[in-house]
Length: 205
Image (cartoon, rainbow, N blue to C red; front, side):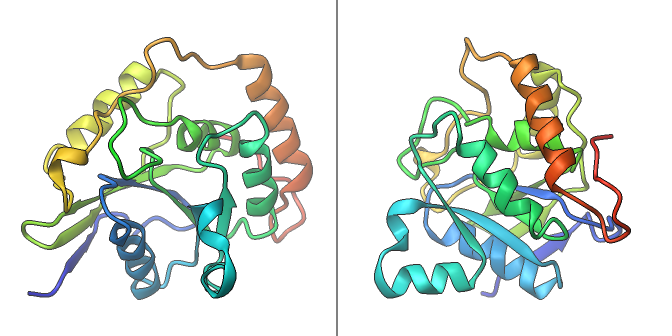
């Protein structure tokens, strides 16, 4: 049985942040990249830095994958913004869980990226039982995590990974909060480094 791709964001012009869920297999990101290629959507993808050794690393770079430290770090998002600014016409593929093993909460990188750049999130979910992948219509993050994640849970309620028990709950770390000062600094950086084809800086909505 072949996979079926349902694209509810086809009418959206411009880049988006593809937040893929659930992430229980290395095939998940490959499916998202294949869906983007089939749909004519140029993409970048975040991949663990450990995967970039030898010939495999050359292939990943040729596929426009960006190496990131799975442990995170204060400058990780800045580095992603710099990479993306050089090719800001592309969408970016992120698995919010960050790991295959199953984690107690989502990472916040995709959320902050959306708030910094003004680029919407399109949730992409897989159902390995029926072999379908769905790309939902774009959603602009509001800055209210409770509200935004409630919508995410509703959109992703039918998702089923290759290993369902490894899927992580759709929530952020309980004590996490948006650092407004840092957010504004990153927005200012994005304004400086990212330009549209007309030469005007891209700014958040």
